[in-house]
Image 1 (spheres, one colour):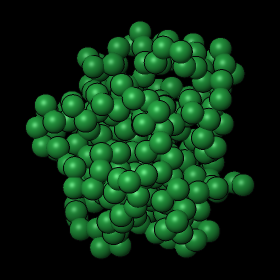
Image 2: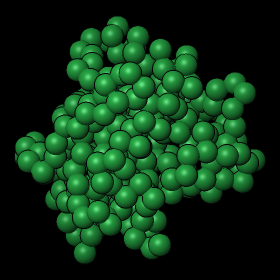
Image 3: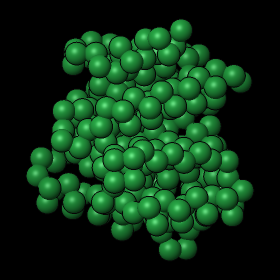
Image 4: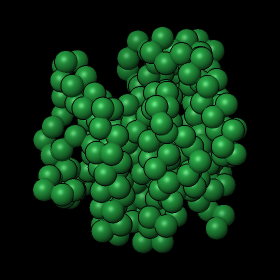
Length: 246
C-alpha cells in the first residue's frame, strides 16, 4: 500500500507543516535550529541534511512526505540558528567553510544526531539523507564511521577528500544522480563507485537521463518529474526494507 499513495504525497499541495516544529539545540557553544516531526518513540527515524540554502520549506515538505509514511524526521541544521542565506555569495561562503573544515562538519552532523535522540527519536534505527550540499555532507557522515543503517545522497557532491576513504562506513550507501549534472561529473560518479567497491561497501548508485543538478527541487527549472518520482520511489522502498525489518 505504501506505493499507492507515495505519488499523491509527492505532489501534495499543502505547505503547512502543522505536526512539525522548530527545535533548538547546542553544539559546543553554538545554537542550532533543526526541524522535527515525531511519530511514536519506536518509529524509525530519517535524518535529513539541508541544501546550501539552510533549512527551508523544501526540507520541511520532504519531512512531511516522510512523516506521512510513518517515519519520525529530524532535519539537521549545519549553519546555525537564524542563519538562512538568501544570496549565492552567502551560500557559497557557508558551505565552503565546512568543506574546508571536515572535522567541523562531522561535529555538527554528530550534534544533530545527538539532538534527535534528545528529542525522543529512535537514533538506533535510522537512515540519513541529504540534497546537494546535504548530499555531500551525508557522504562525510558515512566516511566518519557513524553507525547508521543508510546514507543517501540526492544530487550531492561525490568527490572524496584527499586522505579519506570509505573503509569505516557502517551502513549502505545510496546515490541518486543526474547524468546531465554539470556541477558533479560522471567521472566523480564512477570514481565513487570504484572507491565503494574497493572498500567493500554495500551500495547502489542510480543515474537519470536528462536530469540536471538539483533535479528534485520542486518549482524550479531544474526539476525533473520523472527522475524525482523514480528516485523517491526507490528511496522509500529502501527505507521500508531497511528500517522496518530489524
